[in-house]
Length: 350
Image (tube, rainbow, N blue to C red; front, top):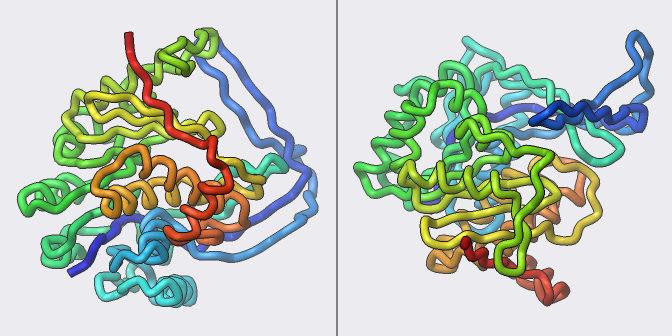
């Protein structure tokens, strides 16, 4: 029996870091977006270059295992050297690999990750085998015998198995957490509603939450004061709207502004844990998987789980790579003691 099984993408990532990238901000009436730019037609010097394994299923499985959970993963990779490197990486983190599907039909997923001087990144992704997980690739018996199923963002044809997997987890009393990606959101709100209503935990970033709910976070709207905290009112609207789909806990991550959570009764806000940012890649996966692992460890204490997740995510951004900087629970607690003022705020809505 596994404590958790993850399912989602697995990639070989090429990290490219250069200080030559410029950050360009573009604003309209209702939106503001940042773009990473390079001089057109120029040859850009690379400051740092590295290959690492990544992808939502890999990153979260590695972190779950590092936190002491008996972990397996369902991914689809090729037989070539990229796929072999992914297997070695999982074995290093002691993740069970018996549910991995190997194929000659598609190549292993590959990403080029462009990192800015601010530590943020733009990802150029070739989905490869990640986009072709089929229903007969999924070991449902392994899911049945697990405490948790963690669904990382699925892409391409793989999104077609999402509803069947969610229904199976619900029918067999397996707790499910889902990190909804844009490919799944494009399937439509009615399709996702059937999936979200079976989930214990739903995690999205602010842009994904906006895409799912149709609610824009208006840049010209001031944050409103709730209790002792100020929160953008559109974030509150998003949390309420997603909660209507009957999931137990909804989480929206908002980069430097921290994270927000809602369990249908209480709103929670947790700021960023102090960190020197090297790369933000993998922070979301580290946060999401640590939150789920912490719920299991703390008997569903949302406040502690948000704090533990924030600490582990901060440790990851201090390192170059999505699987670098993982902390154990003991190390997380030690970090928290160094910052006694760090806390989760409960927000009272008027």
